[in-house]
Length: 77
Image (cartoon, rainbow, N blue to C red; front, side, top):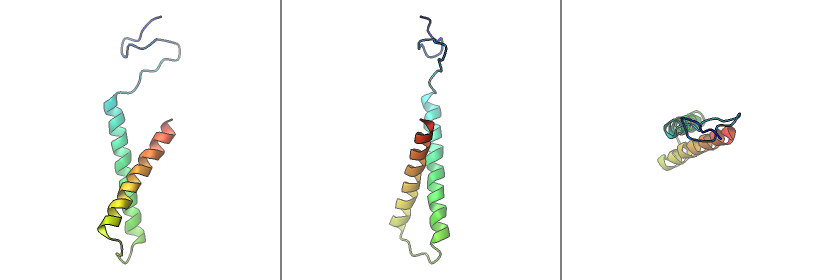
């Protein structure tokens, strides 16, 4: 069986080369940043009297990043 010149995998009719690790890392970083920003904006919109503490804000931003990455990974398959 022939091999792919790029990734050295089996060259079948439905062959797709795997994405490069740097591109995957950049996608995950961008999605985590977007989720963190969404969490921060959610706190900014809902906390009008500024009752949330810094620790809670960090937890919400971190949870937003994790949820964003989780949704992205789930949709990518």
